[in-house]
Amino acid sequence: MIRSYLEAHWVAAALFMGVALLLLLPLGVPDGDRALLLIYLASPIYMLHQVEEHLGDRFRRFVNARVFGGVEALTTGDVLLINLPGVWGINLAALYAAYFIAAGWGLAAAWLILVNGLSHLGMAAHLRSYNPGLASAVLVFIPFGLYAVLTIPATTLQLVVALAIAIGIHAAIALHALQRARAARGAIAQA
Image (cartoon, rainbow, N blue to C red; front, side, top):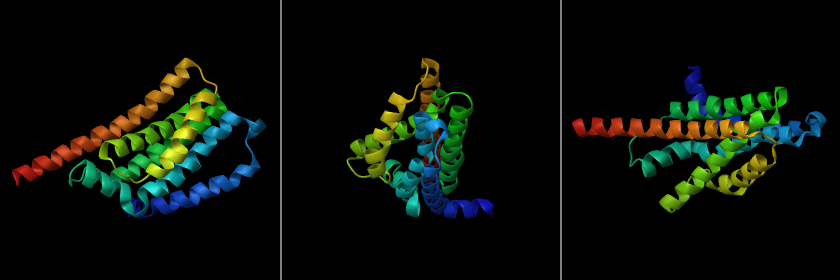
């Protein structure tokens, strides 16, 4: 019951939470820390992108129809799992790591935004069409992600770990969708 409720309403929650997090911003970031501010901003920026991307289940339906030829490669449960623990959870963990350890350990939030933005751009180029989330990816994600990655102080290890997390999450999503699509096509062929 809770899962079906979340599947139906998480995008509205993303809009509410994204705006609420931005409204809390005037309360400040400790010591005016720009790196911590950027990592904090990753969450509301991503949440507002998720509204463009997922309102009305647009992205899942688009990917299933256009990328996977009409088979269900992504379910509503997959989308929920990707976006709540996979994005919100990573961004929260990145913020805590940046605050309690060092700013560079929060770079996963910035790389997640940048990799996602580039993925939307790549999909648009490949399909030669708009995809849900493309506008905010191009106008906000890519510039913000680049700025954050280039200005947040980090060691090489922190940069590599953060990039590996972002690429790993996107690769896991793509592999899962490919496997589900393959299985769906196999079931259709056997019927």
